[in-house]
Amino acid sequence: MSTYENVWRVLAELITEFRRRDLDIPPQVMDDLRSAKTLIEVLKLDPSVVETTERIEGYLRNVESYLLPVMQDEFEPGAAEEWVRRVEEAWRVLPRAREAPIRFVPGLPRGQHWVRIRVEEPLNVDEVGEMAEEEGVSWRMEEDGYVLVYGDGAKVKSLIKRIAKKLRDERGAV
Image (cartoon, rainbow, N blue to C red):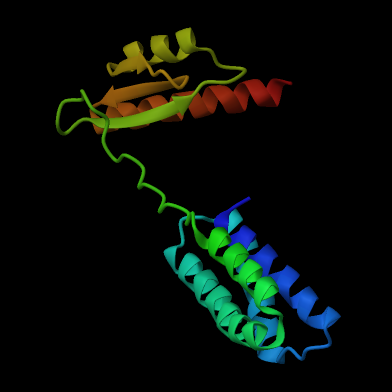
């Protein structure tokens, strides 16, 4: 569960406590809580959009900025302190910004075009390596199971076309 989900959950529980005590909650606060939940789900699908995290944080802070002062006025001091502690604890570990993917591959000569290929059925590593050598490009197996193919741009492109054709032909034959 992400930090935002934790904060959302604690704030939702606090709203439940408000309702249990018959305290009013403005519609805007509920709208902000719903919007935060929706954006949290969007963030799960596409974590690359930085604006989403900023908007989630804004909505959650709006809800928090309404609930905490009202809670401190309406709840007994011990209960209020416990809720403040829970909210602070939920915020404590903010998600790290995702690191941008590496746009270069260490160890390749400058100016080389490259592509990483995930080898799966019906292809195998030997076939990809053989086709790469026939096209006149270099290749190597990476630790993560991908095959790195690099060389002249036109030759790399030609190899990709050959691999795609082979996959189409083999899948069409099934």
